[in-house]
Image (tube, rainbow, N blue to C red):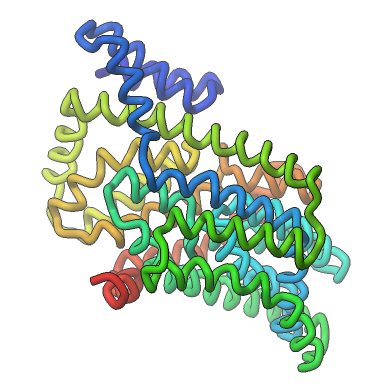
Length: 424
């Protein structure tokens, strides 16, 4: 077992892609123990991605790409400006509200940061906001994307933990709105401290006009969340419906999507999907090796020997996930840690839906922390700032996110209220 972890850690430190580090470590281990045939290794990797719920992955990725390319993000941003741009620190609030709306379409933080982030940072610069504040609030608000449904990380967690994806999606609504409220409270405090005024006057006519333009886009979250909540379709079918709706808007209503754009979007989706699924396959093999060698049982027993108090277990798990999130990509971290942590979570009576939200939020915070925070790299490129300066800009905005993490850890009802109402 030392060989498995040694090869994995050395590969990571050497900068090897995560799927090669996971798969390579597993293959080296199986070769050394000499008891597992090669075809079993291939079977386990294929089995890791042979799951119906995982079909939602390419469709949610495609839906997000279609939304970005079809110009829907501009309509969302204009409506958010009209709604909250009149508050002090207006464009900071617009940043958060825009991310909440876009969260109901993309399901990924990187799509939010790369799509809306480009518009938001430019607008805030044009209105005289400091670059550090613009980049910080854009990064922090992008993490709302995978919390409010749909959510790509929650699909992966649901598959790995055998938990209802519909319940996970519904559980994310209240924490996602709580994240938005805390970030807007931080923006208000920042605006008062630095004397930032309002960016425009509130005009009901402007709000009405931008709302009408944004209505088709705003219907997307209602289509996805409402359809799943009332049992019209499964999460996978919801992803397909979101793609169909996005194409309808882009091709027929807005006329902003042509065959050339669709071809490029398709290639981007295939590339992103392939990278996600190959990580899932390699991580499934890695997790299977840990399970068959009873390492997960030993780790679970070791954790339970420290304490059996659910709250202390969650505190330890939070610290572990925050640390892991600094070094591992989200999908890989979920795929590796779920087989290890789920036995402990179930043993002490923690609801797996609550744990799913806690895990995803922890790993979203990891996207904002060096050395491998993906959102940091995206916004560094978008804003034309150095990576070090981007990191320093984002650090203060981690406080509201950690506060929300503490709240959903201490108060399970924040995550379980809606799933209980609709599913239990």
